[in-house]
Length: 276
Image 1 (cartoon, helix red, strand yellow):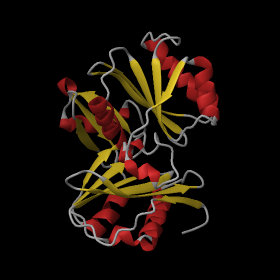
Image 2 (cartoon, rainbow, N blue to C red):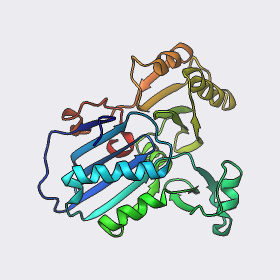
Image 3 (cartoon, one colour):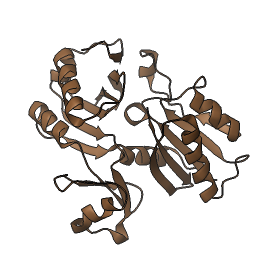
Image 4 (tube, one colour):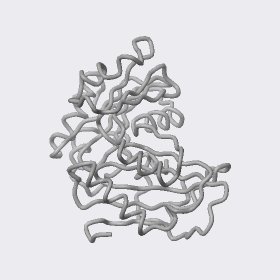
């Protein structure tokens, strides 16, 4: 592994993985995975590889992942089940009442530029009557299939929405923001309803807060009243947090109680998709 990759790994070592689930998440900014007990869901092992800079292509990502597989022996153990999370902004959510499987390309054409050769998939989002249409990283899927055989995969926003809706039922409109290196997923919930979900790319802290304030304005959220919860790659010392706190009165971190955080150098609100 090159020195341009920062690695965070739990202290526990695994020698066998009987009745274990391997969950993998990757993007152009990094690769992470955890091993959990298939029945109790307890997290047994976690490892995160953070790239020094955003990669420019899927070919580069595949090479990085191949290097990770060469170095980490745990990825070569036997698992009862393998689940994969594709993290990108190449998606759109479609209500089931408007969904037609023959029109997948048309849905994405409204939001992103797609190639004729792109493979398009969709998830059923549990808890709401909607489909998440997206472009998975097929070359990475092919590599993982060579290593594990069949596995399940979903888009990261599907996992995010499902987890937030399962664990949070705010009485008032509440905003949740999942922060990555140069992107943010904004989710707004009220009781058991999903009011808003979208992803935005940003380059500066001003871009970052602009999208939050824009969504708040569209949903008529009072900056002095509504609650904003962060998960992901953000902390109180970051410029992103500071500018959010400047404009939003009630800012919190959505921490979870996963015991694995005692073994890794990570904030308890980070890696929400795998550990939340």
